[in-house]
Image 1 (tube, rainbow over the protein chains, first blue to last red):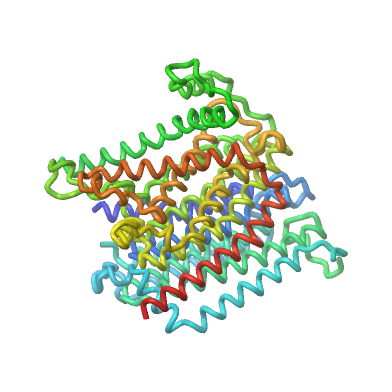
Image 2: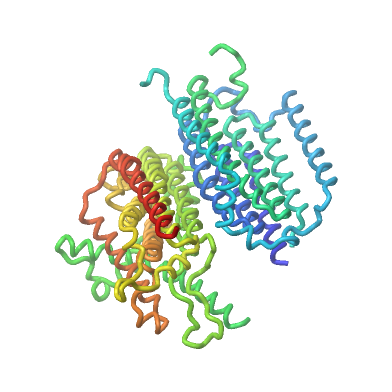
Length: 177
Length: 100
Length: 343
């Protein structure tokens, strides 16, 4: 019973915060609400016997990526922006493209609902078949990561290097050395 | 014990919210944030399925998704900064003409 | 309710209470030690030896007017100190401060002295400490003032830069102990070599200890790394526009962060509550822990009033070009030695 309560609390927080993220006009508030959503997701990961993923979520997503977003929002002064008229319009537009977008989003919701309803085994309680001790062990995670998935691991590190170089090059001002 | 379907419903709802954000919002930063919501929804799906099947791979793939999301956020934000320097606007509708 | 649950709730309450007291005591300790280093008495008028000075300070702060600048963001201006202090207190939750005890035979099952024992405890402390960046950067932004913004941005850039060296030094200790749980790392340091030298990791990892302490000082924005909040440089940086209670929360968060860093340094490198066999046998290991943490906190305060401050570019250059490569070398050397001696 307390487990279900915790799940509903975290799920409600994650969904509620995400809804507010896309509904806010001020990007600064959106970033902070997304951090709250990530925290709730981290709680869900702990319930799924993945403590390392939960902590990595906080360290990487909420602690690093969102700081990057926050810095960019502050650098561009996005929350006080007084640009052209189109920037001061309602966050959800009522133009023709906006209506098409809303239709597509609704279509996606219908599709996802249908796909979920076709899924067998969806009422099986998570964790009823295997124990969580082995899955939650960081030693096991490291072992599998560095033996079976070595290539993906090394490729990811090269990816990060490329992204770092790319970000530095892209954000440079023109004419700088 | 929470059924697997509950986690998947949360993941689907989050993914739908993210997609709605990408389609409907007219602010480049909010669009990037909605993409991050979608990536997190997918992570939740992976971990839930991994738990249900008793496989470690569900957690492992979330690391790769997180890393790719970090790299993509960095490059995407650098692009936004470069775009903003040219047009002084964060509205994607401001970048519709091919000529700078 | 059974007794064990009550005792555990009591331990949580006691930890929280002691943290709040620690920040008050540190206010006084800082001023007294500062005074003695500068060859004068510190505060000595309020209470015997100035012991009631923190009460006077807090009363003064509470009676001040709560200001908010006109252009300041209403929600973020109040949220920033709350975030800072919440992250500071929450980080101490995964830090154990004593061995398992039965409270001198009162309980039949021993209860662990510490709020929580998480199997990834070390990473939890690191994660929550990295959330402390938000309090500072939001305070700088929400104050709608140039000095605050600069102070906030510089402080947060400094914190995230030194987090790298901090984490890599921790990784070397994790290699030695073989576990991410802080309690297990402490218990791995419980024996002695040659009968008299305690098996603390500071002897196995001297470079790591130095790196950790330097990174810890930089993380908490203390001197000599306190450029972003120094009075002579940025008019007190990110907390310039704050007053009264909202202001009081920032130094409190800073002192609690100091206590957490010292507690983790004690747990990881100085053997935690082990080292004095007599007290450990009596179940008073937490006194040893308290003593070691106090020593490190004294080192913090001593360093502040002795060493001059780093300029900001020197600070960032030091963090990225010297400390981080040193911690990577430390990690690789530790990994090689662990492999060699365990193969």
